Length: 256
Image (cartoon, rainbow, N blue to C red; front, side):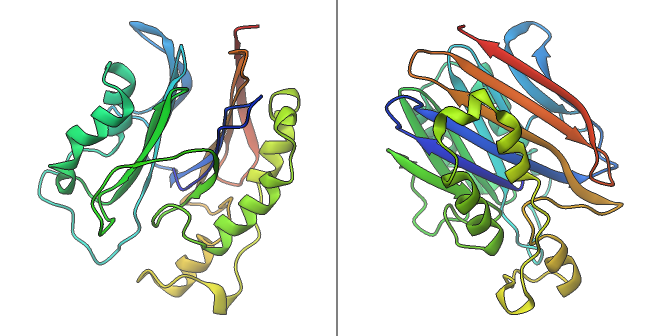
């Protein structure tokens, strides 16, 4: 996952999530679907390490993560897959706060990550690259997460926030295509606005758009989640080919 927008605490739409997953096209994965043995859990699956980048389980438990971009950093030997962080929360029964507190003491075992987990009772954030090294509760508001700390104003994050802030919350469930269109923005940052994370400049440029298209690496899927105060929930995933064209799409609706 490389960029995600999160809205928490609206009185009629308490949870809205829009996210793009960016990955090498050669890395095997399966699209979002109910998991065998866990029919209320909907998530894609990384077929290399068994984890996931984003998932939802009834009644309203969710999690997603992004990698923290640090090309000069070598992960610890035998570092666990970051996708297990989301998977284990979804399959467990700890509160979001307790789950992140349990990770905190050994968070450096993983390569750099940003992790958001929660349910309608509370949403929590942890990055193992945050100098403060604390968990943070996300109260009412709108947030954007890319490959640096939460709400870092990278151009792609600012663009996505502007587009999605302009959509009325009720549009998300009624017309998820509008959210998917915002996620499919291929506008790259100008050269002087690029973040400097240590990548080769051309690759930094490629990664500067909310939606990434290239033969080897790019946006593999977009996900939209909209939860109403009534409990009605939409989970929508749109997959893409390496040339950025739509492939399969799946929509689930609960509580109607």
